[in-house]
Length: 314
Image (cartoon, rainbow, N blue to C red; front, side, top):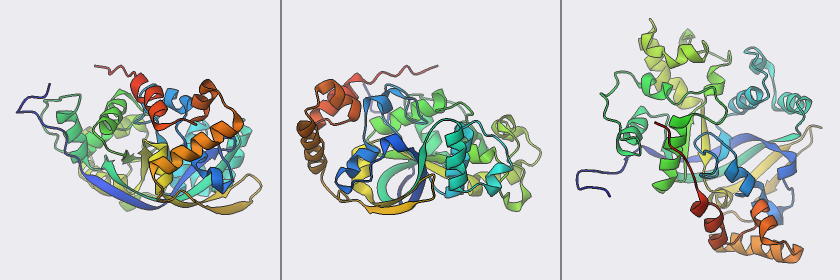
């Protein structure tokens, strides 16, 4: 129980809007506008899969990159194509072809949306707030440089680390819609380097920036570059869907189309009716409904929220 001396984290919150990018598996995408809600739906598989700031069996997380280049860097990393020079010349279509060589068919999506109450973890003060007043209850001395806080968010592990897991679970439990965080993948590629600051030096060098000789330059880098090269994770597929105005897809053949979202600005009840209508028309049983995310709001709470299980590491 919280005492009178305790308080919740008070992070920097942002409303993000504009065009955001992601590579999306073809088998989880529909071009039908009346089924647009299925493109970003919370399913059992997503709930059980680990993602950065959305650990397995705890919550869903829908990932987006701020720029095309960041989306390409993230996708190339997960395809085990860690050629630092490749990012400079790779287009989204090139990345789609590289992913296909690895055995998966993807689309490249440019999604326009606006969503509020996003925790800004590109701001070291937000990290400090969650460390001190969230689950961790950290009592350490305040760090001198912002890069020391942001460095803890950087992990080469797929799906993040225990630290990002805890921050993500806390952020959702405190009622926030998602998080913004620096792109570790783009830091590991040899992209354009502002002011010739050699932050792209490999993960271990980045994580130990506090001992680097150019610490003041790296401090500048944390305040500038890490705020420009960021990703976002939205915790609720329903909230995300209702915030999207339209998206444009690009496939492996170079074909492209823009789809308006008929559910933009809709109520949660409208999305629930759409899910349950499809479920009824197809005669789907409860097990398959959970697999596809075609659930009522009460069923979704039972399926996901009430079954959340996350072991917070020491």
